[in-house]
Amino acid sequence: MDKPVSPASPSSKTSKKGIFITFEGIEGSGKTTQLDLLYQTLKTKKIPVVKTFEPGGSSHGEKIRDLVIGFSQKKISKLTELFLFLADRTQHVQEIILPTLSKNQIVLCDRFSDSTLTYQGYGRGIDLDLIAKTNLAASFNLVPDLTFFLDLPVLEGLRRVRKRGKLNRMDKETVFFYEKVRKGYLKLAEGEKRIKVLDALQDKKKLQQEIFQQTSKLLSKRFNCSLERLT
Ligand SMILES: Nc1ncnc2c1ncn2[C@@H]1O[C@H](COP(=O)(O)OP(=O)(O)OP(=O)(O)O)[C@@H](O)[C@H]1O
Ligand SMILES: [Mg+2]
Image (cartoon, rainbow, N blue to C red):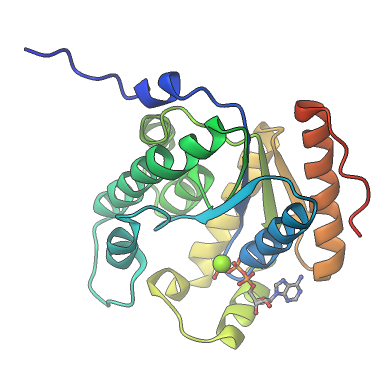
């Protein structure tokens, strides 16, 4: 019989040379807005960068995204939800993220493993150790180099999302649920230096500057290149 393939094998084959940056936070905290701004800035400065998102960033992702956060009112069990997010991540990391990093590029990702810990762990109450282990297996041990946690009071996040329009399944959780998720993020940030907590009540431009500065610092450390000023 063939030997089983170790869950971490793709990352050992595809050595990580680029920089992996993730954006995290509750609904409406400004993740997509800030990711897009950083993406545009890096593009303007001719830095090779790819933007992507979870769930749904891979070729199979759209179907998984639809199952897990689509507009359906159907109930889904906690563990089914967890494993769908993890399945989505495996495909995404293997197909998009690792190959891009191996080309020395920057990957900006809208949500990643921290979302699973906070929503399915702190939010839904699934065992955190189980999530931590399966997160690593699903992502071939990939951990972001830098994570921006956009921290916002829950009610303000929901206000922004409602103003924006159509709500998906995850947007319809209770305030109590999002409070648990927010606290989860703050807990994670206490133990992880890579997670930068940003006050998402600040205006977009200020946040953009802070995010740019942190990214710039990391780039100069890793690639020995300076990005100079924002504009
Ligand atoms: N700093 C800010 N101040 C005020 N409004 C903001 C700020 N950043 C973003 N917004 C607005 O809030 C809304 C939500 O922003 P955005 O879509 O970037 O959040 P998100 O975290 O990606 O949300 P989701 O989790 O639902 O994808 C948008 O209408 C956006 O224009
Ligand atoms: Mg978004």
